Length: 144
Image 1 (cartoon, rainbow, N blue to C red):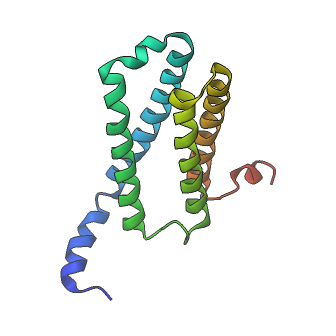
Image 2: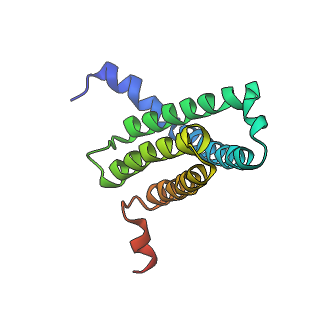
């Protein structure tokens, strides 16, 4: 059981949940769109990826995204390994990060980078679907 001091600290935070969720959804949109832009630039205009702002913006967006996601999980008491959809979402998030790195930096050939980029985009689609349906198998909902 929480002490009254903990309740006075945590209770007001629930009032901010809609704003935190708005920030989280906005950062998901920004990170996905900016990944697609960088992926296109990697294919057509690789020099654009060397601009300072292009290198510095993704960590800011992704840190805000991660912080808002953790805050929402804490406020809603939903944690990976406790909620199957959230476990799946975090697992695919790790895959997305690796695929994104292969697509934008680590891929040794353009073909490998394109394949990794396509799978990274698909993983973002899965993450969004799992979040919206709160189901680790959101594709099943299409056929039921």
